[in-house]
Image (cartoon, rainbow, N blue to C red; front, side):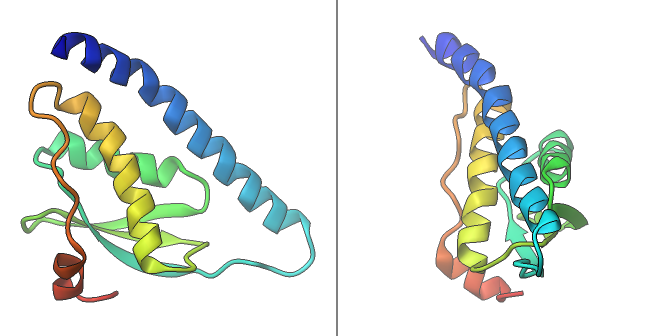
Length: 131
């Protein structure tokens, strides 16, 4: 049964990521084609649950391939931390939650037996500082 779930998660993954790319493409396109700007750019520190270089690289690339966001730095301490620049950050906590949702989908594919670990708590994010 575990193998079947992993196959289903793997098949779902490109649809999830494709939808995210299309959705954010329209947000950036709308902002570029309409007068004024609704962007609220910010750098956000995002602690991750990535254990391997492959997982970290995949997550960083997924973020950078999504229009309006780019991974600018990767911390090598544990847990691995990504510093992400985004054009649209209204709330840092909800932005982190969006990145963690993306990470959930990635880890569901890369860890078929271990499953997806729980997300970092708000206290862990606050200890690291709201940047």
